[in-house]
Length: 144
Image (cartoon, rainbow, N blue to C red; front, side, top):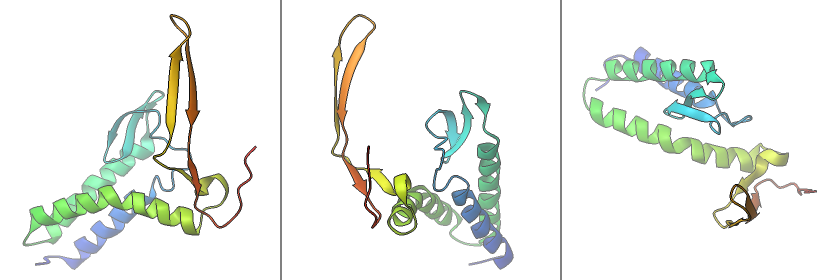
């Protein structure tokens, strides 16, 4: 089933590097992203994001190495790797927040928030939001 263990190991290492490039999202470059590829920001309002382009190229190289390292079940393996690569960061961020993060990095949003907006004028909108935050660390949070 495995044609080349060396290429498989390189592929796994490169995929790990790709996943770590924007983890744990200290500046959250995805907020101002205008185009992206596999969660890598390619362009934003300031232009091209070099780290995102580098990560995209690394991801493609890792997938090529993965395909070349396997004899059978190539399509199944690619689909499985894409699924894991898509869903794993969410769980890794939760684990990071609950174990290593402190301060603002340990706080996450819950789905129980609501916003209400009212039109005050033709070009003016007034809004009020109530957000529910969850402190995932063991430390007490002080909000001002």
